[in-house]
Image (cartoon, rainbow, N blue to C red; front, top):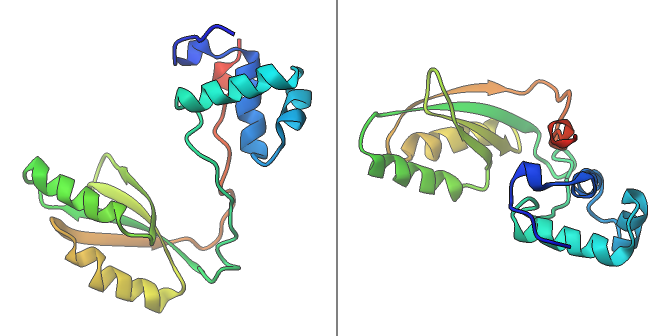
Amino acid sequence: MSTPEATPQALDRYHIALLAELQRDARQSNAELAQRIGLSAAPTWRRVKWLEEQGYITGYRAELDRRKIGLGVLAFVRVDTERSAATATKALEDEIRRLPEVIACHYISGAGTFELQVMATDLDAFSRFSINTLLKLPNVKDIHTSFSLGEIKAGGALPLGHLSD
């Protein structure tokens, strides 16, 4: 198999099928993957390795039920920062990356600088985390929190329809 450039245009229907199948169930054996996408095992394995090497596949993990492991609170926290030097923003980013309670962080447009998704066992634990940790992070001016009242859809696979011919 020739190695195409790492662009969405370089992905053929087998690559796209592999991405879809692995998002659906990454625990499938190579033989199962091969059968599902209509290739033999060896080219399937080579294509998966290529997708990993090119950075299309960045890792594998188990999806956990947060409630079963005692994480009853999901909070969305907008962080307002002092507008200052890039070094201060970098220090804040580094600190956020170290916090296991923060499961996602995005730069956002509009009001605020960052939007965090934060997990906690309960409201008391979240309150302690926000006061003792978030508000003490470098360059943080204020935080604004909304709580999830129920999940409609979570842990979804990335859409791939735009990659098809």
